[in-house]
Length: 151
Image (cartoon, rainbow, N blue to C red):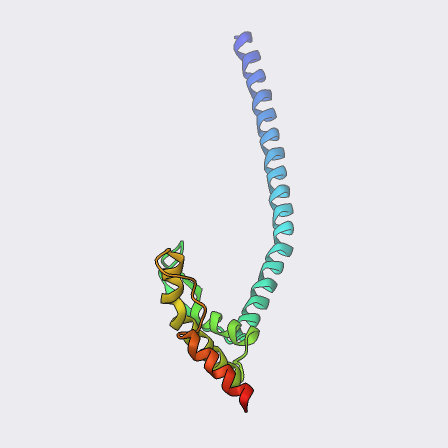
């Protein structure tokens, strides 16, 4: 019986050690959780500030926001999607304003000229025609120069 009593005492001490160790670990876990929450609070505030800044920047640039539920990682929450075309137009008008009418006219004439000469250059580059000199009739050019000299 003495051995059972001694074994009971040992088990009781072991139980007290385990319970005290458990309480100590629980306290450490609570402390660590509190520290993590303290660290997350400034991060959450920074994230919220950044979100507010981004939203105000988007509004300042007249970018339309679309709220679409079911898009993204969680189908229950709406996710903000940018209207890419509106953003692109906004950036283009800011970086490249509409040119004056004279410049637009010159640009149109230039591209019309380029399109007119593409077939001639294409044949030359394929080795099927001589170098295009840009004048349809060389004799006509000489006549024009002689007329200008006589006047």
